[in-house]
Structures are given as structure tokens and as C-alpha cells.
Amino acid sequence: MTARESPRPARRTRLVIDTDPGVDDAAAILLALASPELEVAALTTVAGNAALSQTTSNALRVLELAGAGAVPVAAGADRALAGWRRPGHGSVHGPDGLGGALPGEPAGSPVARHAVELIAGLADEGPLTLVAIAPLTNVALALAMHPDVCGKLERLVVMGGARLEGNVSAAAEFNIWADPEAAARVLGSGVPLTLLPLDVTHQALLTAGELHELSGGGRIGERLGAMVRHYGSEHAASYGDGAFAPLHDVLAVLALVDPGTIELEKAVVEVDTGSSASRGATLVSTRPGSPGVPALVGTRLDRRRFAELLVGRVGEIDAALAAGGREQAGVPAAAGTAAAADA
Ligand code: RIB
Ligand code: CA
Image 1 (cartoon, helix red, strand yellow):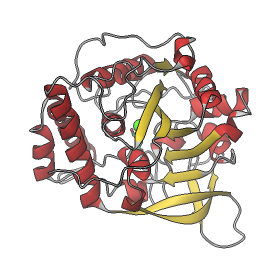
Image 2 (image 1 turned 60 degrees about the vertical axis):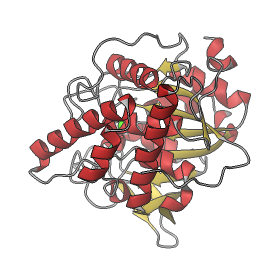
Image 3 (image 1 turned 45 degrees about the vertical axis):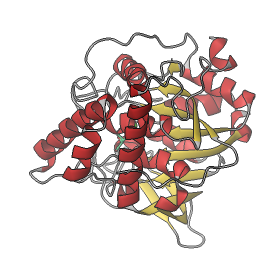
């Protein structure tokens, strides 16, 4: 499957991905690295699908898998703002967060700078889009400690929330549930917001044939395929046979790579930061006059285009690596940026 090329943009979107790898995070990172429309300036890590030390190690290993070890990684928060919940419990991502598909230690290390300082430094250097595919603690801290960042971010793309049923409780989706106070702070920041809730990310599924093709493209595809298979088996254990394994986070990158792939609607969003059973719920309304912060909310996915781009572009970086290409699509040849070099 070759990805029908999107028209090459005049300027690549420079972005930082705040992440808790995580199988679907890994898929999102690989798609970003493989997309000429994007420049991945850095990854910042947070506790979520696994403990902070694990998600940071996983981020480094996913980058190295794709020959993108030059992209800086900065570790951030190991727990929620309120401090009483430390995500990283056992999850559908497996005990190491990547379904055991990338064993061993990374060759590289995270930069010495905290994630918050790296985000602020990158925002100072030029136009920056923040892709948040994990609990929002780092982003909330960055906005609180560097309020000027709000005016410097071009856009905030968040995978999180649910308009219907949650995936951690009946009301709440994991990224919001893990730190509702941080989510409320971030969504209310005033930065132009695109929100991709479970209602649209549950459509992000690969067929068996697409997974087979992904796995046959080379080492990157083979390893990502192993992650997705583990993720699918864990879902089956949790949700029953025939369960699906949605690659939620990929849509936060896809929204930047090929905006026409995801239908968006104007809405307002509120986060439940209370202590009732609905804590962490996202209340989304399109009704005029409803309370909440404005957002473009994802509703429908062109699934075939999603699969075509993910499978096709991972195959392309596999081919580039096989040909000895060091400068992957979307990855700067230089080691990171000045912000990271200050680390
Ligand atoms: O609810 C899905 C989200 O929670 C995704 O970001 C997944 O990686 C987990 O972090
Ligand atoms: Ca995630």
C-alpha cells in the first residue's frame, strides 16, 4: 500500500509531542517522523501508560528504531498536579508500555532540561504546535510557569476526552481522567484547540490485512506490528473477543498531516474536576450559549486514509533506513535544536 501523497505544504509544521509511550503513542511518533509535512522538534514525556522512567525510555527507543535518535527527549511529570494519582498502573500497553516489542535499554538519554523548560524554549525559538497524546500535566505546568507560551503556540492538538462512554470509567477517558485539573487548565488556555475524543479515535483501527502489510515493510513496521498485536490481545482480554485496538494517538498527528482525514465540528468543552463518579468527564456541546471553552472536536475518520498513511509512511522510513538514509522524512539532520542543546 503506498500512501497517496498529500500536496507538499509550503512550510513544515514544527511540533513537539507530549507523550506517554504507549503503543498508540509509538504509532503516532513514527507517523510524525515519516511525514514531510511535519518537523518533530522534540518529544516530552509524562507518566501515563507506564511510569515516567518507562515512558521516557520508550520514547528514546521508538526514536532510535526509526533512526531519529537526534530528536531530543525531555522527561516531565511523574504524577498528576494534585499528586494523588500516579498513573503507570498495568495497562493494555503491557508492563513495559510497548507490548514487549522493544526490549533492552535505549542507546541515548533524555536531555537534562525538564519537559516544561524544553517546551518553553522551543516556543521561544519560533512557530510551534503542541501535540498532546498523554495526561496533560506537563502542558499545564508549562502554561503555568511560562504564561507567555500561550501566545506563542500556533495550535494545541489533544487526544483526549469522550462525548459518550469513557474508557477508564463510564464518564472519563484516560488522558483526562489521569489529571483532570491539568486538562481543565490546558483546554482553557486560549490556544487554538483541536480535541480528538474517543468517539473519533475508536475508529482508528487497522484490518488484519493492513496489520500484515505494516509488519512486512521492514524492521520498523515489524516491531510496530508486534506492539499493535499485543495491544489487540490485551484489548481482547479486557473487552472480550473481537475487541478492537484503536490507535487513538495517531489521529492527533493525522490532523496535522492530512486535515481532510478527520471531520471536525465547532463545540465548547468543559472538564469535570469534581470528586464524583464523573470526575474527568469532558462535557462537549454544540448548542449556542453552552458553557465551556471553544474547540474543534473530531467526529468522523476516513479510516482507509488513516490506514493508508500509517502503513504507507512507516514503510517509507523502513525503505529509507534500508537504503542507508539517515535523514528520515520530517527529522532534522542536526541533533535537536538550540533549546535542547542548552540542556
Ligand atoms: O485513552 C487513550 C489514551 O490513553 C491514549 O493516549 C493512550 O496512549 C493512553 O495514554
Ligand atoms: Ca498516549
